[in-house]
Every structure is written in C-alpha cells, then in structure tokens.
Length: 414
Image 1 (cartoon, rainbow, N blue to C red):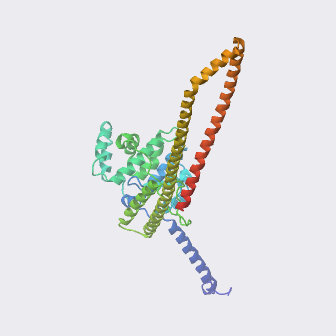
Image 2: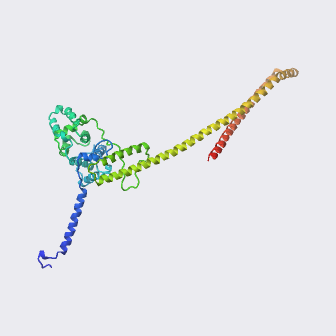
Image 3: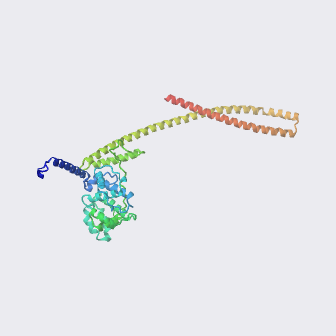
C-alpha cells in the first residue's frame, strides 16, 4: 500500500487514530466543562447563600472573613496571581453548595476567588445609583453627605447595600494596614475594572467606607454545620446543649426556607435541601437523647435528695431518742443529788465530831487538802476522758442506727 496514492491508502489506521483523537477531545471538553462556573445575578446568589446573619453571598462573607483573619497583613494581597484552576475549583464548590474549608487554602487563592466572583457578577454592584454616584464624586465637599442619603434610600436594594458595605469596609482595612504595602493606587487597577466604576468613585468609597456604611462587623455569623458525604454521622461539637441545638435547628430552617423559595432550583440546591433535612433529623434526634439523659439525671438526683432527706429525718429521730434518754438520766441524777443534800447536815456533824476527836493540827489538814486537790484533778481528767469516750460511743451508736434504718428502707423500696 506504500505505492498507492496518499488518498487511496487504507483508512483502517486513520480511522483508529481519528477515533482516539476524537475521544481525547471529548475528554478535554468534559474536563473544561466541569471546571466552568455559571456566574449568576447577585439576587440569586444571595438566595442560594447559607449566611446566617444577613443577605450576603456565602462566598463573599467567608472569603472576606478569612482574608481579614490571616491575609490582611499579607504582602501584595490581591496583586499576587493565583492558579486559575484552583480558583475555579473554589468557585465551583460554592456554586454547587459544597463544603469549602478556606483555612487550608493559600490566602492569595482565596483573595483571587473573591475578586473574580465580584467581577463576574451580572450587573453593577451600585445598581441604579451608579450614574448618580459618578456625578456626586465630582463634588468632593458634599460627596459623603449626599452619597449617604442616596445609599440609605429605598431605591438601593438590600443585597447590594450589604455586599458594598462589606467589600468597601474590607478594602479600607486592607489599605490601612501598613504591613501589606497596599494603597488605593495599587488596588485601583485590580478593583476598578471588576466593579465597573471610575477610579475617583472607587477611591472615595474606600476612604469614606465608615462614614457611608457605619462600623461594619465583618462576621457572617455562626458557622452552619454541614453533613460531609464521607461521614456516616453528623459531626457535632463535643459539648452541645439544648440551646445550641435549637439555634442550629432554627438556622437550618432558615436555609431550607431560602432553598424552597428559589426561582430556578437545580440539582445542587435539591441536594442541599436533602442535606438540610438530614441535618434537622439528626439535630432533633440529638435533642431527644439529651432530654432523655437529663430526665434520667434529674430522676437520680431526685432519688438522692429524697434519700438524704430521709437520712436527715432518721438522724433527727435518733437524736430525739438520745435526748430523751439523757433527760431521764439527768432527772435520776438530780433525784440522787437531792437525797445527798438531805444527808449533808448529818455528815457535817459527824465530820465535826471526828475532827474534834482526832484533834488534827493545821499542818496535817494542809497536807490532806493538797492530797485531796491532786486526787480531784486526777479524777476530773479521768472523768473528762470517760465523758468523751461516752459521747463518741453515743455518736457511733446514732450513726449505726441511722445506717441500719436507711438500709432497711432501701431494701423495702426495692
């Protein structure tokens, strides 16, 4: 076949080669298609957002928060080019409502993602006021006062106000940082084309962001929990409370409501709805588990308190018994004392007669008195020890009686 003309050669190899090339082209087309991102309007982007605090595209809130956290002092922030494929992967994840962990991504890629998203939004962030603001910037002396009135008017949509307040407050923070070497002039070539506004207007909106929008807290709100596809169980914080679960359930309800209100739901929004339903079910199950555990703990605590109360009553009864016993002994001792007092005069007479008969001298009396004092001291010490031992034995007896009665009551209840 080598002697045949080129066009008459066998088409077998050419067909196989063309099929391989065709297959390769299809693969490349599919890859490029998978990396393509559908840029939608700001209103639709807010409707698909899962920000808890305010009406703001999720990518704007999370990327600005991450840049404020670890990129505000980064050299040449927004000016360092980032790999387009990495940026498109992030944008694609947000479009598909997937889980995005920005903390593990290079900060320049995060900044580029915000920059491209804002630049590719349909329409102008300043909406219908763009032309009026461009005219106001010419009157520098009255720019802030007139612009503030215009921005706060009802003609400025809330979603536009929110993203403008966040973006220009953030860019003001970037410019004010002395560590990143960024100025209005260095940021203008990047953001002016993206925002489709003039450089003077961009400069004024950044410089007077606090005057125009007030002090903005660049925090999109609590991090809404997500259910990762790879995990079988919902990952919850270690120390969850019923209050936290209720707040999280309310946030998930808001997200579900927003997803149901989408004008053009797609497969990604439907998958997100299914994920939210699963999360809500798991949260309610966790609430039931915590309530059941609390009820069991409350029952145990109530049982313990009732037992302690019964112990106190038994102790009181035993002490009353001991008190009555001691009162009876005291009365007996008093009776004996009265008998001894009645015998005292006779004893004194006999003592006087014996003293007269013995005729002891004073020295002998003094020695006898000393001996009696010493003997009395010894007897008092022994008496104190005996009393102390008796009191300890009584206390042990009371405690033993209490323990015995409590044990019997517990056995009877069981």
